[in-house]
Length: 200
Image (tube, rainbow, N blue to C red; front, top):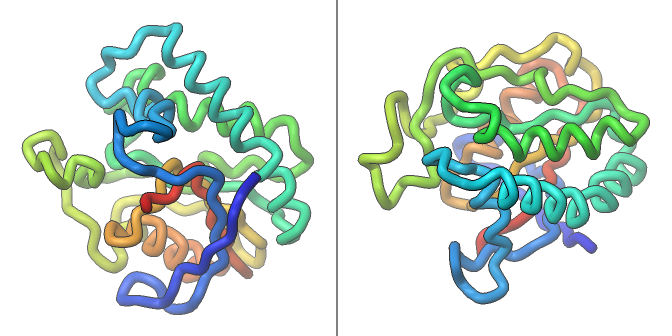
């Protein structure tokens, strides 16, 4: 089950973009919230292997049919993912389990796996710590063009329909909007966003 919404143009994004989500994000530890998404971030690398694998299984069960259906309905050629805020080597494998779970889904669908087509080469602030800036680390907060300034984007996206995946959509952060614009500026034919959850 998933729902559609529209990202509207703003200073990060030049045109309206179709987007989908499967869950409503209410806030960590709130009743009915998909806390498994937070567990997969594993920011302090303290989650047990059991919790991580259980969370990954829940994510796969929640998202696989939505992703498969969106790929068909929107004629998707390539699936990409929003990179984490820091360069990959800044994270332990246990902190990249969201990407690992999405990779499992994509590898079972007939589509180009572009999960490494957007690679962070310069660290940015961790935006989900905006209420606790001491945890955000080095790098800049989002500004228009930050994705193009801090990521390598594969030439493979040119002329293609892209499904871009993220864990949580938050309207005020604009990371998703900026990454979509970067793909469009690099020649993508169209971009559709899927997030596991949307902040309400």
